[in-house]
Picture 1 (spheres, rainbow, N blue to C red):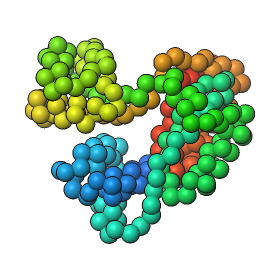
Picture 2: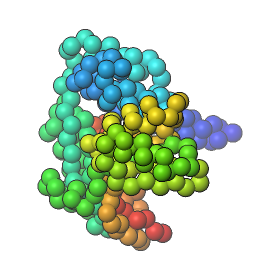
Picture 3: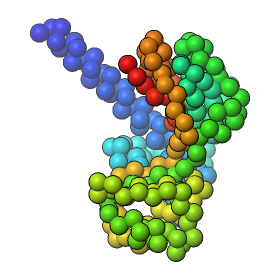
Picture 4: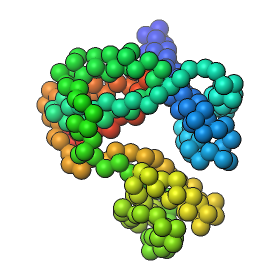
Length: 240
């Protein structure tokens, strides 16, 4: 019984740590959006979108409000966006987006993740040219022609659209994200997005097999443990 309790205690601690990291990442992102574009979600589409994502990921309202209040205060940290690229285990391609108040510290933390997993950090642009920078919007629906017509009427450049299993997936260039989302939200009342993200989508995949699989998992764990890391994109195709 004692050992079972200890396992449960450790599991709860890990869950708590994971939640704290999620809250911290969203709090930081909301703060940056509010500070750069204003703290009113109605007038700041980037902020409104980030708050919506935070709520979907069950970030408590007090965490969101604290970040907004901090941005209104005018002081606080100066976070900047940084991006790192390179080759992970199995020679897969990796892009890491960060928000940091100390680029030198963040670069050092990210570089350690590469070096300790026999990976290689690259220069800017070394792998990103092999990814498409796209916005992805997924919602309930079947009539992709109506959706396409709606977007075209608003001069949205649509990369791809697909209706499958009662869901419509729309891909647009990342620069068209807010225009596409606003056009869809205005055209379809009470529209709820299952997926609402800007991502780097790989043009090709790299098989990661054998011992490289465990090394890749360790690489991902190390990156996720870095407080400044916000998003990780890769083209690894994991096989056992």
